[in-house]
Length: 602
Image (cartoon, rainbow, N blue to C red; front, side, top):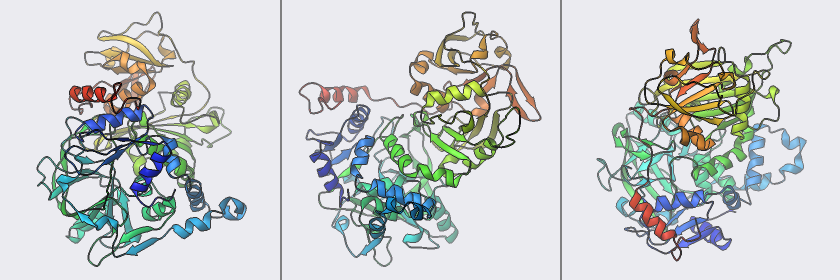
């Protein structure tokens, strides 16, 4: 629906049973976040907190908490936007299926920016300390904006055409930030805002930044959408919201989104940084304090009746899972056109998104060969690792579509079964050592430093996978409590270092178990697929933590003739996991008890 404001969105959701008002006072420090986590896991409604402790503004959460509610908010535009993406990929489709694209004129009619001299968002001003100081985890460095829309323009080529709207972490206070005058921005240099930052450094000038919060949900979704080259986030928001995006344009200032609920304006001195963080992040651990840009605040605007939207980041699944689902629905068809040979890609949410990437590709090279080994898959894997956010993948697993055309990349258990039935550890492991990984991933050797591995498997089944522990299994000294995590996968615990000499002491019954994962708690890691994914891929650095039975190196290629072993235990240099405050948990339990304002919601 073409909402004009966040308030209109809230009213519509409440009218249709998608939102519940909470009139009990809620503390934005830890309490609101724990409520949001619980209601999300329960598949519950959006929540409007009308009384926020220490703050004059109401807060709303879980707007995108279910894929059904996300589709509902964009029920009048989602199909039309998909059609726009299809035509961006292949414009000739309109000639082949003209009836399918009858909604195109309406979409194009709305896809423009309306310049204005004023708008609701600049009607009132406030200060940073009056905004909701949302703190999600006990050790967070301060209050954070978790659904910001950060707007910048290229210093060399100012204007909407070279603008960027992105969702980057914003810390409102704490650390050494000067209250009400400075806030922290956390972004990685490969993002589009990083390009603008680099241009400002080259020019020796400050970078103008506007941070929008709220407004119609189309702008929020556009800020996280990986769009095709040349398609503006603002124009995409106009198509998704079924109305032109109104931008307040005045000489000498950066444009302001007129229909946002809040706007923080200011500048970044690209040569100046301060410690930002810690922050409980999407891998399920704290991202620690590091030097990041500082935004010098000039104005904090808000509209009358402004509402502050928020989400919570933490160990997945969280609300951003729904973002991922709707993004896949809209942009999934783009991938094969950008990366020929790629049939499907899935960044696994339960593993923290970036650590584990699954892919299905073509393996068409030498079709006359009697035995097939990955060849085109390796070319495809290199192309995947050269694409934006996909380049952050730490484990890239890729299989051939020809081996099982009906394999569903989103059926993770089935995907692992398919791969483990076929993989050959003597040839199918391909490492990149001493490279860059996700800033938020502390499993590597340093900040932004770690390794990657591509596991490419093609051909017929090599083995049947075990589903029960072998009766003659003998573990090397120090290993204990073996359990089955998946077919072909054993998890076990170890209190000591685990060297290659220990590997040979496994019994010969392990061909049915090509993968062994050493963990801190094998019961936890084997309880659910999500637990195993999270532990295995967030707590290991491929080059450092992968070993194997009968390992060898030949012409600088590493492999093993027996089972592959991943050491997925927590190491001293890892960031601490996220743990809720017991006192807050008790308070939320009371709110959810019979007679409490949250009873029946989760």
